[in-house]
Amino acid sequence: MQKNHFRICQMTGVAALMVAVLSGCSHYGSHNISKTANATIQGCTDPAITGTATLKEFESEEGIKKLYVQMEVNGLKDGKHAVHIHEVASCQPCGAAKGHHDPGPFGKSTPDAPDFNHPFHMGDLVNMTVVNGVGTLHAVTTRVALSDGRLSVFDHDGSAFIIHTNEDLYCDQDSELNPGCAGGARDACGIIEPVSLM
Image 1 (cartoon, rainbow, N blue to C red):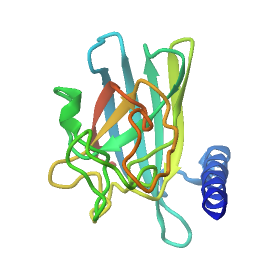
Image 2: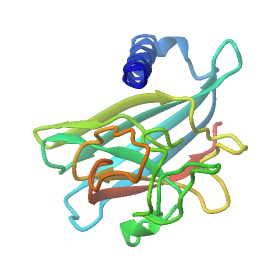
Image 3: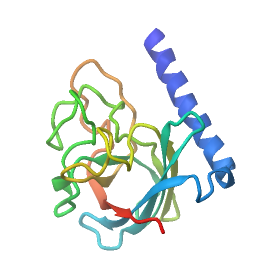
Image 4: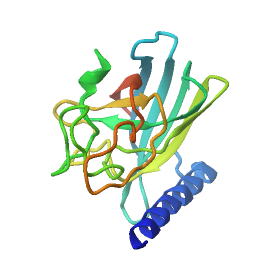
């Protein structure tokens, strides 16, 4: 019961943080943004799936790095789709992106490795909602960064977005993750690339 209460509180906190960012984007003007990155989203097997993602890093008043992720994708089936940052900047094939970006003792290097840290990987994001073939995602996270450091998506082998066929059920287990709990098959991929600020 206590564990479930923690999970509910955590998700509520994430939702509140997203609302705060989306309702006050003007507060984070360009002078607050320290780094940006983009990704071009392409279908793993379906060329009709296309999209873009923008990542903007800024600091809170307390000096905490926050990453704002905005994504729009066309061609996915309607409904919810899991979106994760994966640990390798490769989409050929989509399995080459390997496992979820998760520096530290819980990191995995294979797509289907036993998993004891989901949904608390550094690269785990909220689900994308698709309506009439158009999917949008707006999220903010402190789990990853564009800046140098252990949580950076720009480590020695880079990082990529993976969009899955189904939604992430945010399963929190003490044993191996049930198949499909994190979204199942991979529908689309996009390599995260840095953008220089002028």
